[in-house]
Length: 168
Image 1 (cartoon, rainbow, N blue to C red):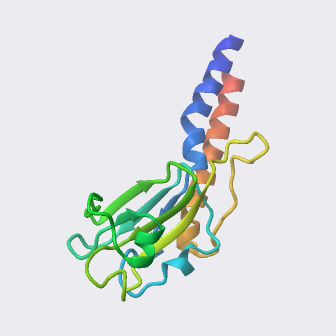
Image 2 (image 1 turned 135 degrees about the horizontal axis):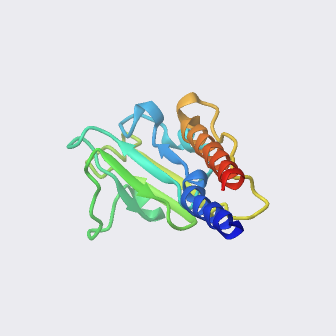
């Protein structure tokens, strides 16, 4: 009976912890990925961690998203072998820590339209000392939505875990 409880708790933790810690960042919030928006200002005050996702929303055919290096970011140019994302709902999982640069390669969009983003991705939160219920990293309602959802799912996981421990 005790091993059943332990197995259930481990299963719940294994399923819910990665989604609790990851945050979905809608690039540009309600504005999306477009011309004339300051993406560096948008990124300020946000914490990006390994496992989080960036979602670039735009009308397909009007923009694209390319991951570039620092030089490509400064020059608004991508290497010839980089394939652009073009769905209009491009999701990029931040899989490694470090500096990340993204641009739109439609002529003029990066250079004069400021359609580029630079972020620093931090190592994944996995320390036992960290809380599974992260506080908001953004004070705007749309930017905090991912953290609110994470907290909600974390609460649900905790309730199910406690219920499973008591009932089984």
